[in-house]
Picture (cartoon, rainbow, N blue to C red):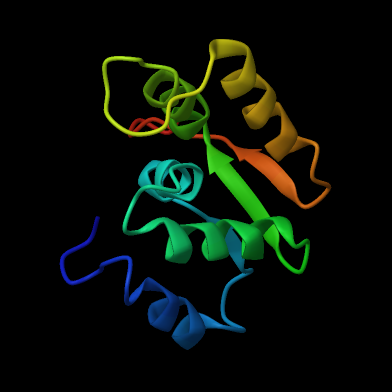
Length: 113
């Protein structure tokens, strides 16, 4: 993350850029994890953030790393908090892409490929 940016002020930054760039909501893997773990102190804020993404009001995207990192963490029984069965984790990821406004965000290597 860029110096000075945090989960708390990134929305302010995006609002200041409104109208200058197309707005696409991209959420960090941790936000997805907190949104699924109702026992987390960050659950309510993360869940509201994900609900905004899935509301369909704006376009959303998930980077490829999130698509693989989320189920790896959420299905790992050795980690604390609520965990999912593998099938449940895969179905949840698939449900993200069932949303008409959500897409996979392609990554580009530093050499442009």
